[in-house]
Amino acid sequence: MRHGSVDPSFGAPNFCESKGVFVTNHVLSGALIGHVAKRRPVTAFVAGVASHLVLDAVPHWGCNLRRPGGPDQFLAVARRDGLLGLTAMAAVALTAERQARSASLAAMAGAVLLDLDKPLVHFFGRDPFPLVVQRLHRRIQNESPTGLRNEFGFGFAFAALDVIAAVVGRGPRPEGSPLDG
Image 1 (cartoon, helix red, strand yellow):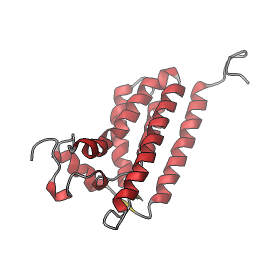
Image 2 (spheres, one colour):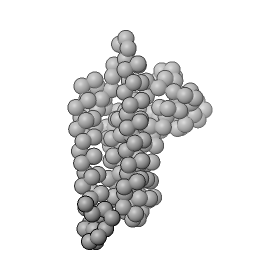
Image 3 (cartoon, helix red, strand yellow):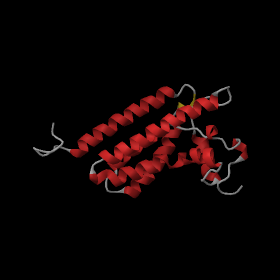
Image 4 (tube, one colour):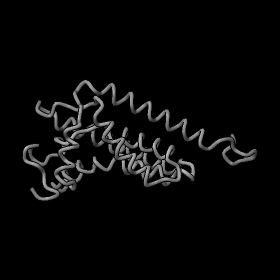
């Protein structure tokens, strides 16, 4: 099978057949990694990719695509999640402390990299990753229709940790700072 094609053993190229943790959770975990890996964007990127695999191995949500309406349900959730993920990336890019900004952007990029297959397969019918990466990514998935609680739990936890890291990272502001209330 050539690079970029879809393995027929996994079904036809269909956006709904490639499932995973909400991309927003990958973004939020990447933001946290970037804060920890300040001034080390390459390390942050690699850690972001690794975090993607770890999160995908944790029990998480996936709709039953074989039932009527399953693919439509998944696509509706994926659209909302994609927009929320992009909003979270923009918020981190605008609010991350200067020293951690490059690492945060790199970690978020690494954390979502493996999920680029979904929009690329959906819109262009091609998976950009070699077959070995496709198989690894699909093999680690641990999802079910009952995993929604974990998705929201991880999302809220990562968001809270990101806010704490941002506040702590900024430290005390000098008196008279324009950010003082």
